[in-house]
Length: 114
Length: 110
Image 1: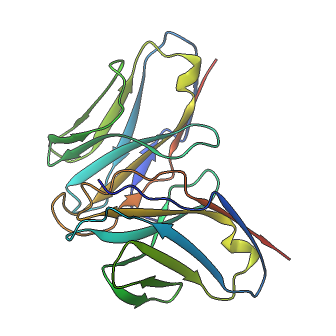
Image 2: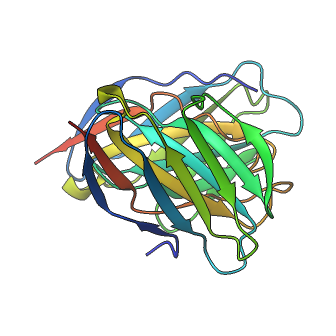
């Protein structure tokens, strides 16, 4: 158990819909990262937040947005969903954005768009 | 960010030692090398991290030559449960070790 909690674990929805994925980082971790992993693909970095502020941005689509709240949990919002958005979405956390350390990953949220 | 190159896949047998090499020719002075393991449908898990020479923990060793342009993850006496994808990352903090690349798919056979 990494200490990172993601909900929901599974989500099935239709094209055009909007969903919200939630992540609670490990206690004390200030940094949250979101990754997308499509079937048999590598992990694509989407976005990073540190203590409520956006710190780094990867290949995140304009239809996707995220935020980190004062209690440090984070939400990833996916809108106007397309079939190609079906993937595992992972959240990871780390103590800091500015020092060496490991990323602790959650178990992921599997999104299926029909 | 330093680009990494790893073999796409490797096969091994139970009980053997497995060495997975990662090339990172443009590694920067401040960069560390970190390896993660990922099982199907699970989040990656940290294995080991190092800067130079050799690092060993309870599950693996990491060998880094003096020029640091490559690194080798060594898994002693693998078992079937070591079948997974192994990722090599290079960067100087958790904030810039963001790109996982394709990883190496290790298959351990009985």
